[in-house]
Length: 130
View (cartoon, rainbow, N blue to C red):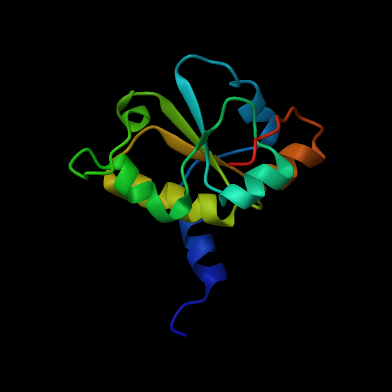
């Protein structure tokens, strides 16, 4: 390997904005903030999500964000601040880094991810199985 996953995450973290779970929670419910859950659908169904979060699977994110893509999702054209998270903060760091380079702003991620959110005792909601 020329570069490890840990190196990629460290490079991303050096260039992106990271919010703690408590910082993020202060913006929960703000009309100008969209929480984006990058985890796999099975993770959401098993563990729940941050209340009101939009599910955007990591594998589709770049396509959903780009207005020229046939997969574009309106939420990403809202002009909101985007707060990304995954389970532990690695996928969301890489995704945030990518979105910054694509020009989507403002965007940040939750350090420690959903696990840190839950460990901090912050609210979650169940996700129905499809």
